[in-house]
Length: 276
Image (cartoon, rainbow, N blue to C red; front, side):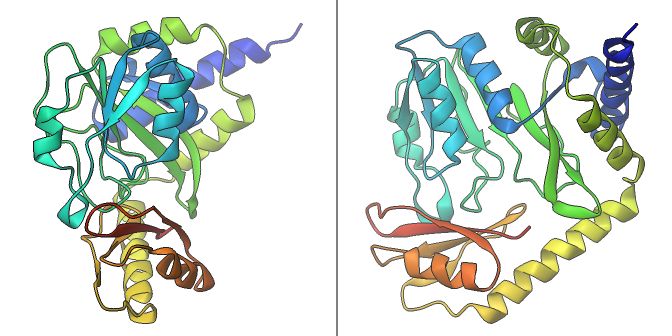
């Protein structure tokens, strides 16, 4: 008799208990998912209908728009201005939708969660997968937070993600996801990582990010019209007054960092450099 499903179920319960203890929420308020894309798709499929509108700020993670479009919905870009923050005028003017996806912290180095006021009947999902934590924390002013669990001995490795929010909402999403279990090897790896997480591990991770950040700043010379944005989480941002930040991204890649450059918008362009 195959006892795999029972074992997986018991370990999945233990996974939620251990992770929730570090995050500071009830175990039933946390729904582990195999990837950030899977979590986003679960939320968009649950709350969106074809033709619905989602508000988000680009540049952002490609998984945001992909999940929205896969649900048959459309998104409104509220834009970004100085220091990577969303444009408050555009955010207020954009009509509320069923869902707002907030960067927390955003790929550009800004925190979107407080940048525009909540709208009635609009779900606020904060993507905190770039937060500077091994296990993540709920984001204030958000209905749901997307967390990521990292391997403490290899911080560039994301093991699992989770949706965190009110128990009733998380339970509804869990019912929609169905009885499918996470792969047993992935659950075991996540449990092993959680057992090694403590204040010391978090401090080591913070020191790792600080070292990577300073090494990048020392090694990468910015040209006229280019400046560093505030560091947020595991990413650094560069604001470019020039039309194209591709050269900055290319220079960062030569130094061993993962980097993305976005097309220019009025006043300049943006580059995200991953510190992991």
